[in-house]
Structure formats: C-alpha cells, structure tokens
Image 1: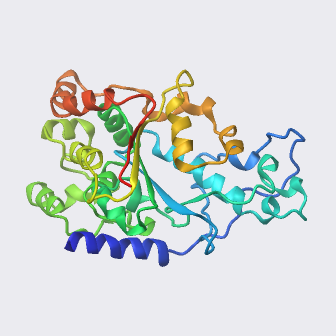
Image 2: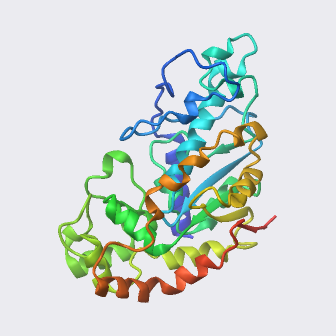
Length: 334
C-alpha cells in the first residue's frame, strides 16, 4: 500500500507540477490541397523531442488512456504519433469554423472537434511514470473508465534495442518503480527500491550511475547476459499485466504486439477501436514506417555464449509473447 501511495504521489506530481511547453507542433505553413495532407502528423525531426500537449479542459474528453510496454518494442513510435494527434486537435485553427483550414497543421482533421480520450502522459515532459509501469494496478486512480494499452514484443529484440540506444540505466530505474524527470537523468538518480539497493550492494554505486554505468551488468549487453537473470523484471511485468483482473484492476487492458510491417495490421485496427479514435485519424497513421522501427532485429548483437545465456533467461517470455494473437488481446475488467 505504501508503494501504491508513493506512486500516486508521483502521478499527481507528473500531472500537476511538471512545467508545460508552449512551443508549436510545427511552424505555420501553407499546405497541399490534398484532403489527406497532414504535415503536423508526418513531420518528424531526428534528435528533437516531441512537443507536448496542453492540459485537458474540463469536459473535453470522456475518459483517459495510457500506453505502457516492456521497452524496446516501438512504444516511442506509437506515443509520438498519438501526441502529435492530440496537438493537432488542440490547435484553434483545427477546431474553429471561423479559421482557415490552411492554417491548421492537418487540414484533413480541421473542424473535427476533440479526441474522445486523453493520453495521460500527453502534457508532461517524460513518459517514464507510465511508459514502463511495472504494476498496472497503479493506474486504478484514473477510474474504471480508464483504458490501458500494454505493448509487448520479443524480449531479446527489446534488450538489443534498449542497450543499442544506451537506455538501459533509465530502463532499469523505470521498471523498478523509480520515477525521475529529464533533469535527473544524468548521474545518480534518487531511488529507494530494494532491487536498486541490492544492485548497488553487489557492484557499487557506479553500477547505477546513468547514462551508461562504467561497471556492473548495466554497463553493456554482454555484462547483462553474464549476470544471468532478468534484472529488468520484464517477465514479472508481463505476468503482472496479463493477470491484472478485477478487483485489482477495474479498467480494461489491451495487449498488443506492434506489427513488423503492413502485412497484418488487424491489431492496430483493434487498438484504434479500443482508444475510440475517429475514423478519419486512422487513415493518417504512418503504416509505411512500421518496418523502420529500431527493434525489428530479433537477436541481440552479442557473442554466442552471451546469446545462449539470454535465451535461457528470456526463452519462456519469448514463447509467451509469440503465443499472443496478432489481433491483440482484450482483458475486460468492467
């Protein structure tokens, strides 16, 4: 209960105290007459963090939703698109009948009102609190009307993605209920988690110094494999989400593997239904970018011995993920 209360405090801080950014999604520009033109949704600047959404206005949405994953499975790809979608609908030029459609970042969506549900990480500067949440029951504070998306994928490919992008230290903190802001991401991140304390006891303080620890199992993927255990707790997280039923979880959960290409997008279609996205928005999803996502490589780039050790740790989780239906799995708790 203490841990739940602590996370609730962090949730309130994330939703109430984080400073919002007021910068525009993209600069004003004249757009093509193509009715499906949408520069605000297709514009992506490499290396530049996505801009944020404003706070929701009372009565603007019928409910909330969140997106969580084991990490390294395309979560950022999906979240960035959803955030841009929210920003488009929040532009006055896109919702005012007196404004010219050409001043809207997405003429195809102009004068379409609002999105039914609000993404709860939309207007804070870090998704860490929700993006890799270990225990879904901590979302219960948003009420029974909340809808939670849980993205999964090959744990071996996910590990490869996390370490290749040098996210492993942050990832470890997030999966062990250690929330932090962007300003806290360098050096020693404050965290009282028992697992964090144990890692420091075994390998020293430097083993949890972000961004990339100089020693310990988080220093490299080879070192992580040598540790021989699911240090991130991905199996524990997977079991927690797949088993979160009433009364522990009072909201619906949709479990999905993002498709690796456009051959089978039935799961995405069910996801859009789950989030109640307007039909017109679905036509603007960047399906062509599915094959570009960095986690498409299935096996980590490590030695044969290290790969064998990783398979020994994550083989069961790999099989469980592969057994999930391509169209997604809906866990009804209402």
